[in-house]
Image (cartoon, rainbow, N blue to C red; front, side, top):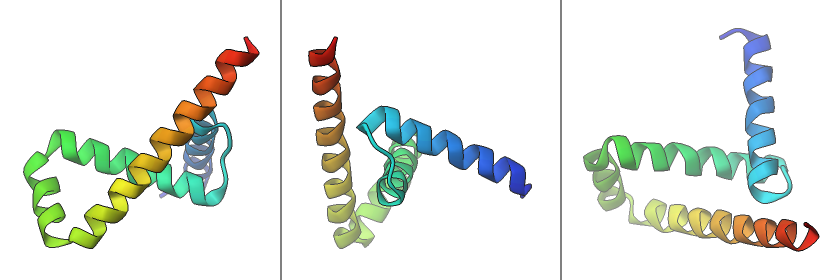
Length: 85
């Protein structure tokens, strides 16, 4: 993979994380990457997501935690932005 493209894509993901959550740490960016990919997989290949959920219940629980964290942070970020407007 082209290194320049990789940097550009990483920048896109970092900016997306910042706009979604209000900040973009390495940890948050990684969580957003997992959340986005899992969401895409669950919508485009539901049987695969269901199989993974059954095969790895601990992974499913961890993913649910990531999803809830992102949802909460996004709601807080949007609420703070609406107060500033």
